[in-house]
Length: 454
Image 1 (cartoon, rainbow, N blue to C red):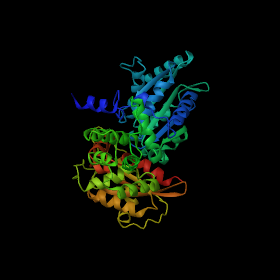
Image 2: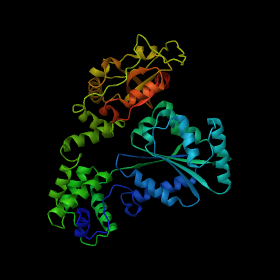
Image 3: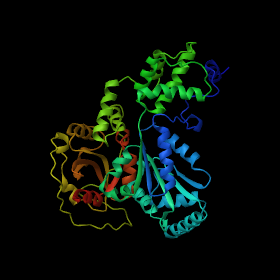
Image 4: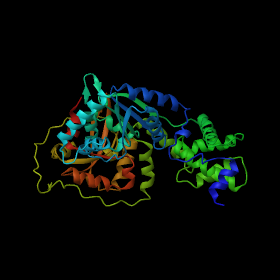
């Protein structure tokens, strides 16, 4: 007899209760999840603008998206885009292809006209088209700008295309950029999936067990629930993984009660857990304080000492900015920048404050933004810069300063690249600890505009 049937039979289950693949029967409506789904359904069907859903890794965004698809009903045509690396001109073709339009051999302008005509026809037949974009936090800014343009498609006073962005908190950091303000203003509804509180974790565990056919008494001891809640940080994917392993540990002990020791075995068997509880708590508080310094970055800092730096394509040297053949580089005169005066009492960051380099760079060239964080946290900024300097050449690290709504920010950028392809290759080749914070590539023209904007 295999392990899985014995595990199910032991607890009287009809199916595994804690699988991580989304299943509508296991949607937990507590902890404001059900209310969020209802509000999301209203926001989508009202068709007034772009909708945004943000949540940490493993917080339940995919499950919410699946429930949304199931609840939208037959009169809605769903387009689901799961690839965050779509280039700007690829998104339009992807949507048209999902709607089964004949776009073979057509250029972008013709595809846009064909799509608009098709959307008008669908609207006339009382059908709504909803585009769900997963992993939106990883989309290049240029692709997000295309999303904004697609949101302009309308007939009279009605939007022809309803867009929903699902992403991690890094999406908010991207949208906070000055260059994203037009897209940001088109987001009419925003939802956030917060981690489950400790009081919700026990109810969540029992709900999943009952949904899988369990009919016995509550079998997770209070101490086991507390330990599991702390180790998972309230993230449903982590809860599922740890709970499943804890059930296996209880089965191995031939007991029906899941104790703290079983959860501890699950923690020890997982890549995450309570081995560093103080570090995790500090990471959570720092992420809340900084906003865009999320848990992923702090995890990357922990990983840095354990992962050697991967080779990164060399940026354009300051002495000779080579441009690939066939591209005519337009050399713009050095812009005179007047960055806001910020008190950044930070050794590592202060050593990189060189707006002259930024003003002399070709406006059409690209750089990689590794971090954008409040200037009021110099210690965290210093730590990031020092860590980054061990992974990429320090002389290719630079900073710029900007003010948004009265708050000073410091941007840390890496290198100068002659075209988008070179920047994209360098972005993909960044060492893992620098990838965790979801870096993006930007043009120098865009950064200058951000600095000079009030």
